[in-house]
Length: 398
Image 1: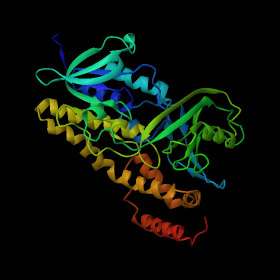
Image 2 (image 1 turned 45 degrees about the horizontal axis):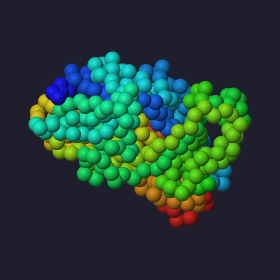
Image 3 (image 1 turned 30 degrees about the vertical axis):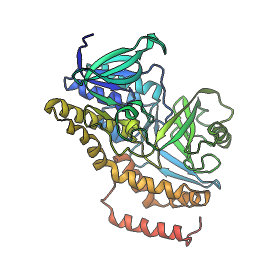
């Protein structure tokens, strides 16, 4: 059977895939965006201001504006960090992801609903994406679409990566689980609709953290861990009890793998490149992913555009180089933070204690809001260095 040839097939319609499809459609490319039906990813939903500016996200998509974060230690110490001169927006992924997909469609991408199966090659060596349309079900007939390029944005355990990218099956991840509940009244004890709570407590997560993130009328309560024998549901129930939210109604429950380390390679040197969770671009330590997924989708789209325009498959490797040049140093630092501070409750206690420091607070949120390491205050960096040494050596009590 003769198939029409598309410029790009994007597999996965989360923030990375939808951004890539949107960008390429705006460039005039013929784009198909393939996504499964009914998929909602567990996510705290934080959107920093730079993401809103860079990706033209309107405030109407925000369900809450967070003006402070509260960190809770294993012993119950609470450190409140104000977000000075701004806010962090919160989205509900159920609606936000669909808005991104709809925007890609309105920009010219063709939306397809189904499940990716594999990539075949026709006699000319051109990629043919095979998928099961939603109407066909698991045993139904496979549909095929011929394409010059494929962007794999199909999540942390990406089938595109596993099939097409050397080492694509080797990815480090945590299992994230959360429960969406009805938010209590704004004046409820120990709950504020503009405050995110982050719990550093081994009983809630032995190697990551737990969270309570308000989403307006709803709230996300969850945690993550790399340990396969740790009960995420039991830990989340404990978190709800500690946070005083065990009595509110549960709307839905969701779990999914979240990658914590970028893959060493994102392309197959031919016609496939990865983006988002499939490439492993969730920030260690914080677990933040939406901004990095969208940025990854953009650099993947730019690399594909260059490959289509020049015919040089080597252009696909530029996606990873651009991403790591922009954010690799931040990921490296966050990885060290997680591997050191999250290892036991004594270190978690000291980590929260360090966060009482104003220099730490300001530089941390400057870096978070602007998505780059802050270099404008060298003396503050020096002070933080010596304060860290004091905590690490035990000169300062936890």
